Structures are given as C-alpha cells and as structure tokens.
Image (tube, rainbow, N blue to C red; front, top):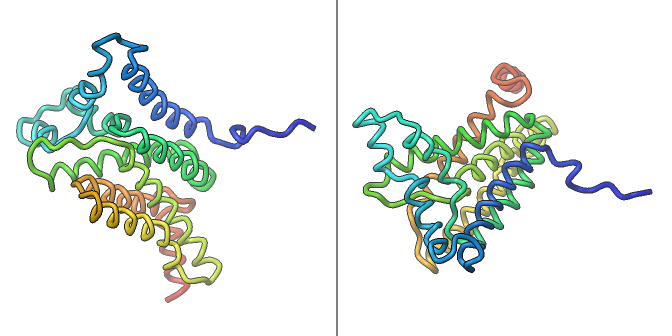
Length: 226
C-alpha cells in the first residue's frame, strides 16, 4: 500500500500561504547569489522593504492625509511576506503549516485566511499607532501570532469542555514570549513585538466570532457555568 503524503492532509489555502512566504524568500536568496537579477538583484530585498513594508508613516498617509490608494493599503498585508532573515522565514513558514492545519480543521480554511489577513492589518495598525518614525515593520510573525491566538482560543474551549484547567491553553504564547524576552535581553529587542502581541490578541478575540457556534456558543457555555 502506497503511503499517503503528509501534504494531502494540509488545506490548499494553507499551502498557498506557505509557498508565498517561502517562494518570495527564495527569489531574494537567488538574487543575493547573482542567479536572478544580476548585480541589481542584491538590492531587491531592500527595495521590497521600501515598497511593501509597513511603518507609522504609512498609517499617517491613511489617517492624516486620507490616502486610500492601493499602493498604501496593500502594505497592511504585504509586509508579512517580506523578511530580513532566512531563519525567520523557516520558522514562520513552519508555524503557518502547523497552526494553519489545526486552525483550518477547527475553523475552516477560508477563516484561516481571514484570520491571517485581519491580524496582519490589526497588528500593523497598532504598531503604526505605537511606534513613531519610519521604522519598518516586516516579516510574517504578526499573522503567525494571530494564528496562535486562534489556536489558543480553540484549545481554551476544548479544555473547558473537558473540565480541565483552561489556563493551560496559554502555554504556547507564554513560552514564545519568554523566548522573545530572552533574545531581546541578549541581542537587543525591537518594536515588532508590539505588532506580534497585537496579532495574538486580535486572533484570540476574532476567534470568538469565527469559532463553530460563534458568540452565541460562547455565551451558552458561560451561562452553563454560572
């Protein structure tokens, strides 16, 4: 009997998201080695950060100047597909696959994409409000933290239904925040944790509506315990 490929169990939309993350980085890597773009290829990553990255200046364009052009609005999402380090791409792609599979099975594939987009936008907006200047926000960890928020909410519900301690659902985010704090103390931190934490909070609370049964199901569970 031919063994079933593990990719057969992955939702197609999750695979597409992962391929976008990995594929864009592959282009940058090939350009760095001169295989694509020739001498100009070396600057493609920097150009992508300038054209597709996010910053508080982008948010100012929307809120202050009323600029709702596609070139500005696309940055609320496109920043998630531009990374500065290969290791960041590997981790974010792996987490999108793992978390995307679980959340797609629980919420549905389309809702996973909605969570990815919504947490990207909300995380960027909070970042833009909190961080002054043109400091760029790039990388896929903001929506990844959004998926972690959705995973945490689903686990929180499951633990509650099983009569177990629901605080255990927050172990993953607690572990990741501890690692991030340690790396920040050792290597120096940056302001991107603001968007990542915002993405987690957004993912958790958006899941209240997106989970099976939605808000009414949550209210019914709370009434049963009161």
